[in-house]
Length: 193
Image (tube, rainbow, N blue to C red; front, side, top):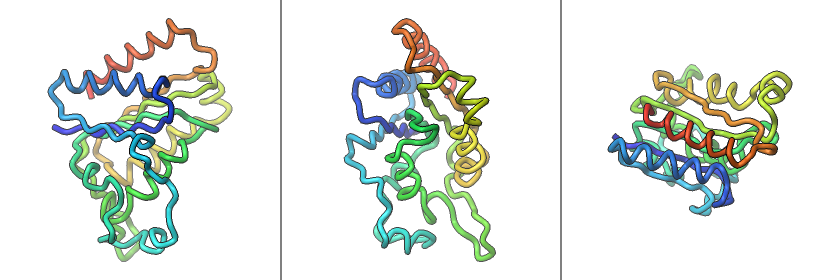
């Protein structure tokens, strides 16, 4: 069983990096093969080129999109990222735009419907953090990241996979003790990934 962790945070001392280390350790203890894709460490360019956009719906893109083989090889997918301005970091959005394309994540049918191709994924989880308190993220902003993942991304990629969003709110005012408790919770949750 192979798990792909996609990390989208530039700072190695960040909560996201520590959460990723804990997730990787938990999965390794369970005997899963873990593939860690740190988008910043890879020097990933999130900008969709004009040529990529023109070929966006091609079912056999040439050249192969970045990281396509790593995505296809995974049975479990975990995204770890902060929410900036209530959305994905640009580098993660670029991963969606440049990697999860036709021929990798879905096929576009002649009638316009999309057929998911990542049906080997049995689990799709996201671990994210916000600076805002939970009530602002959910009640005022409308929990946009959860909506995008559950209504947009997951149905197009892996509709049968189990989805889980672990969202840590209030990072801007979080104490070291509360942060450590959140990291322990994340590690525990990934024993069931």
